[in-house]
Length: 378
Image 1 (cartoon, helix red, strand yellow):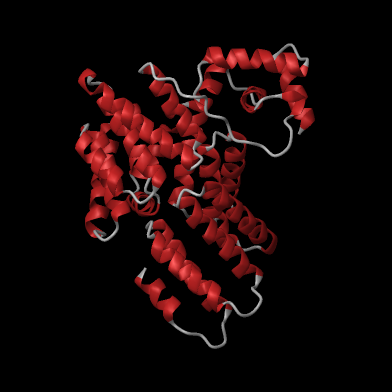
Image 2: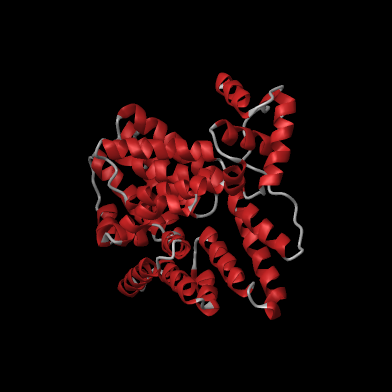
């Protein structure tokens, strides 16, 4: 970040393309560190200095970096739209260095919005970049693991989780660039019964926090991971208050509420904390996470309105609702009712109810007929 700041501050009277790109490198690093005010200051200074038409490379970088910053700030719709524009330009003019990071943001955004089709589309693009030798990002492996877990359960990503955690370089890169990664890895390792992997993540996260004390997001991630591993509500609370990233803060609140849920005396606090997490997830457009918390609140007898799945442009086919569309799409891909329920955070009985409505509206009588009709619509 020091080098990036110095490069940004260095004047270039001829305004070479690489000199124009330097500030965006700085902004991207500030966004990763969740230094939002500083990132906006640099971005505004770039806008004020802009005098000549941009090259395609600069235009693509500008959109992609601005989008990643907006997404990290919780402005998901604006951020994803900017990244999508940047990717479109980058793909057309062959700016390959932007693609992996942009695909990660798009896949992560779609996953949080319960839009699995879009998520898998960008995960497939990430895989293509890996095959071409451009992958090079720990974040790509992480978001791929998350999407696979959402589809098939944590057992399906055991090898990928172990591969990330046991590679010190990959793990270190991931922990300082994706604040949500440490807690997710600890959670996944816990589900797999791999406490040794969870300990490795916590040790690495704490080392990163000690080495970078100026970044509250890295310290928050370390406290979050340690709080999960140790069952320490105090560390989870401190993490929630430290995170500049709204989604990460909501995640820490959710984990804290999950810990308190095991203590009957803390019922009132548990409900209040779950509701705080729900409010933040909803505010940042994290439909899938909000749906999960709604279900947890129901276990406490607290009912909240159903969380709507990701909205799609235009009218949905056959008069399907958003939830029916999501169910139909996943079933047409061959998923069982249990798998669909796990991805949408609804019960298999609710999946069956929606699937029956889909059959009626589409005039089909089986999953095979649904898959054939769905393919014909694409």
